[in-house]
Amino acid sequence: MRRTVKPSPQEWRTVPLPRGWVKIRKRILHRDPQCTLRTRCQGAASEEVDHIGDPNDHSDRNLRGVCHTCHAHRTGQQGAAAANARRPSRRRPAPRHPGIT
Ligand SMILES: [Zn+2]
Image 1 (spheres, rainbow, N blue to C red):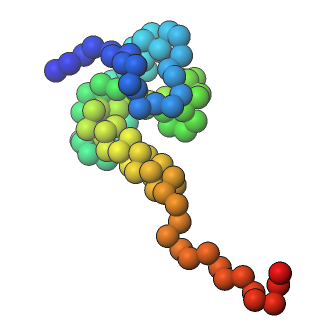
Image 2: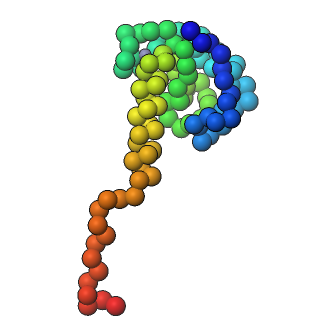
Image 3: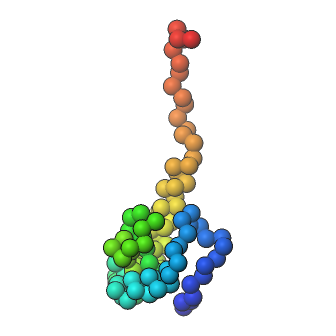
């Protein structure tokens, strides 16, 4: 199992993680030793820290420990939602009334 934190330059995040993230992360994983999501596990050991709401809010109440499987599932959903939001609408624009110039 890889336990290294990789601050890669090609991070998908649009919001950079704060200074001291490693310490914050450690604290949250200590507080939530088991996955709090459990959408894909039965309470596996927490390996990653998820932002519950605002990705800019790094306070403890906005963070929770999750396992890799559930986190990947969740971030995958968020990525898909973001991609859908960026895609232009497939709906035809409403026709303009010919009488209006
Ligand atoms: Zn899990």
